[in-house]
Amino acid sequence: MQALVRARLLDSHCHLPASALASERDSRWPGLDLPDTGRYFCNTTCEPEWRVALNLAGPESAIIPFLGIHPWFAETVTPGWERRLLLLLQKNPAGLGETGLDKSCPVNFDRQQQVFLAQLSMAVELHRPLVIHCVKAWGRLLEILEALAAPRPAIMLHSFSGSLEIMQRLLALGCFISFSPRLISNRQLHPLFIAAPLTRLLLETDTACHPSRPDPPPEATTISHLYQVAAALRGIPLPEFSQQVWNNGKIFAHTILPR
Ligand SMILES: [Zn+2]
Image 1 (cartoon, rainbow, N blue to C red):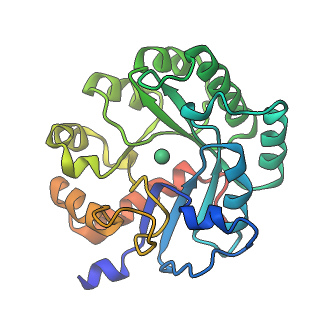
Image 2: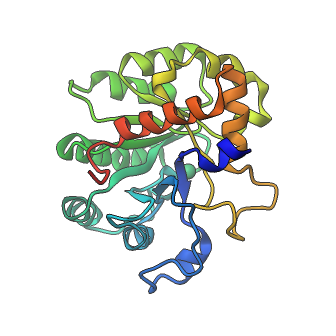
């Protein structure tokens, strides 16, 4: 357990807890008690969250903000959203996310594509890392990404659950593959996780930024537990494994991380 306490753990995809959104006016997150050895890629899903995430970030903060419109919220954007997002990105070291395509939700798919493509262009133009959510839309997503001229932005497929063939096509494009606690609940992901190159792996909770916050359900998997399971699956000592994922996160987000 000692190694766990000392290891630097990256949560490569998490979200703002409801408490931070409720206290939007606070520039600091009240009661936030992040271990100083952690780093959190904190994603947003809709316009009102952008400012909150930016307020939590800063040169000394463990929270790295990602601003985006999630496909579930593609129909909630208000006129001028692209310009507002672009301005915030130009002024702040932030990535783009969470965005993507999701055919399992009732949101108009043409609208999802418009909103996703706008964010993808910003990632290309500003050299920002991009976090993609993809559900039942792999064909269209791969078509878009494979048509993208190099150099492509750094791309993470979050909570990956596609096939081995899809993963290999994403890897050929230079993408990072992030695994969520589904790795624990769904054994069918194990062969994929083991087949992924160590240099492209990321791990995420996909929940609120800190396991001690009351917002995640009590049974939510902590990032420490996920690292323990993942390191054991790869047969690599935990400190070595967590350092590798930490380094992968640094490469993925190098254009926005503090120097
Ligand atoms: Zn998410």
